[in-house]
Image (cartoon, rainbow, N blue to C red; front, top):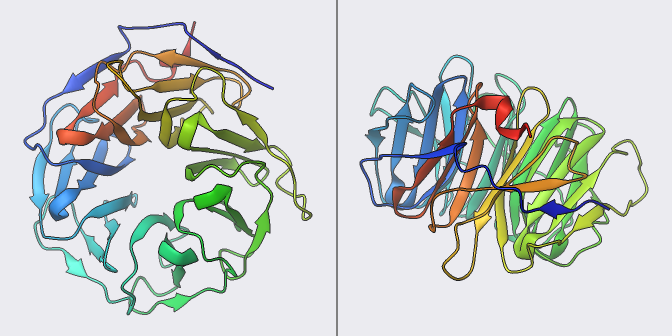
Length: 308
């Protein structure tokens, strides 16, 4: 079982200025080009790894998740079945009709034409034609789903009451895995088809290094020093460094924790914000997190952010 240490590295993270006070929930990058989405349908784009941001779309529905393809094409998912497709440099976003009034909370791109979206009441929808048509998958799950992650044909979904679902066929069929917790799991990241880490409420962290196990597996769970703090998002660098961001209680900074050893041990980093952080992503050279009141914090030193 790992631990969370209190080693602080205040020089690692800086706060970026953004042209909004709207809460930002989702963030994704293709190298230095990124997109953040949030309340009131806002969409912001950056071309410099989160240093500066430009408004490139807004609407009415809350937007919760985003994915950016290598071509720059961007997928966005949100509440009331909102699905959008477009280019960050343009205000011309195409609405996709999934014929579902679901609160979408997560999306995962599998290839150029295949995408999964997940949300309320255990719903997972799948498209194989670039978003023209969508099919509901059979999850046998009624819990709200909050996160998706994929590695090859394997896909994980996480959500309320410690729910973990896994698919071995690109999200066509699903089965449950035991998580060992009843806390809500809010995000998951997969380094490969055997290794995934999920984070959630009350500082919960669960991980598996036995992704091939078909019977339910008890995942490792950490609560050390984090019982009053929720972890809302997690990202992984190209070298396997993990970074999770969340929200705290009281007057302290919102937590950012980093692991260099596959999630066995973690340490705090100083976020320099008391605003809750709801999304974090790898920029190609560092991490960038977003949250309440348009907060953006970024780590400029890339992988060295997790060096002692």
